[in-house]
Length: 308
Image (cartoon, rainbow, N blue to C red; front, side, top):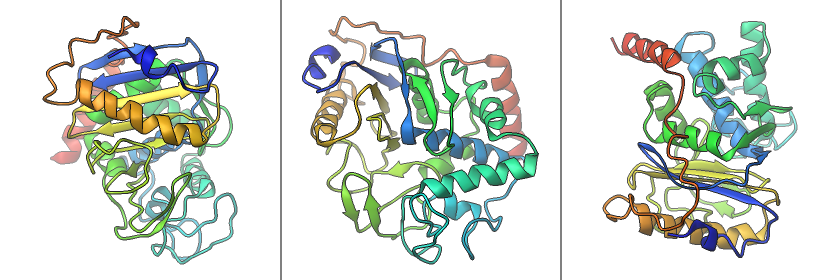
């Protein structure tokens, strides 16, 4: 697969793409830039908050947000909050209303409990742990991160097969919360079952969708207004991430599923071609597996104690 050829017609200035399996990056085009993560920031925020729940710093059942809402509702876009206002549009647990405000409130709840900035917890619990050295939060925990493609590939590999993050935390971001809720998937219209975990969107059988028709229903991830995307497909044993310098629009609706389908056909489980990229691009094969080992030991120790 020639990644450069696959994205050559994208109407952007520069773009980066990485394909990842459980061992790390298997194909990569890196434009060398740090880009806006936009709403992929929500995944980082959710992982931070969920890690704190494992230590008892906060609880998913904490009442926070509109009346009747909990931290769990906020992370799953089920609190009823409007997109960027404190105004509630529906009772908690009745509609999937995508909300920046809900994610900001969830991060603020952790701040109040710890007495320190959310950014400190984000670094301690996720960024430093995974050695995501190019990533920084500049503004809202809902959409303010900036990230390079190699860091985003590290995150995707960890979500595909957690070794440093607690497996229970990864399960929570990627497992359906509040099933059966209808709502609007931004950019793709109303979905009868607009499935989300506690931080990630879940593909299920949504149509239209930004991933490929060949992605499994278990595929989870996020995309952003900056035309960033990250999907993780546990059944294909693959993940794909992309960043660029041009905002999301109809062009992305057209080209993202095409790229994702080609990735699945070339590298998907059972394709037999995962080791044979012909792209000639920088493979960067160490970028998905070089996270801080000493911190990882600490996380694995916590996972062991949590399961005993």
